[in-house]
Image (cartoon, rainbow, N blue to C red; front, side, top):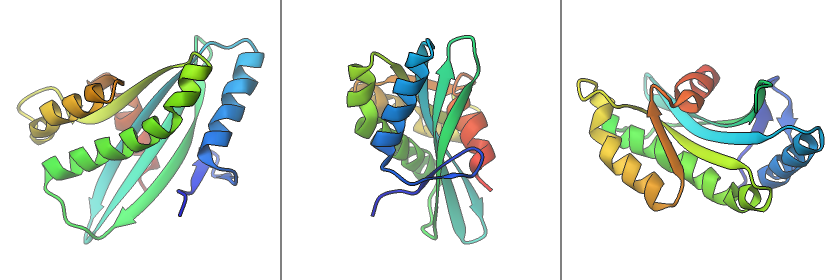
Length: 159
């Protein structure tokens, strides 16, 4: 079953995400914008549920941006490290699905991980594996504090 995506306004995206992203790239480049896309996932544990929010953030060079979002809930239990790596795998999954478009339209793309580079934080346990996973897939990688797609945008999308 395909993931349900929406715009930040809440408006549902009714077409496959690959088509929606391609339409957005075409529309924005026709307007003369140079785009960069950042993909990130964040999660929150609420009682027995963990909610994940994945975002595709489109940045118009010097002109703001917009994003598409997807939320998903599960009752599966995770350690912090597992949850960080599930976040990364969700981001990589969508990055991989879209990377052909980004190559075709010459759009830079980064995968953002909501993982702290400071070893004092528990999420740091997952940093090496996450970085290896993302870079091994051939994607550019950003962690906190540069990972705004996951730590700011997706964070706001987790209810």
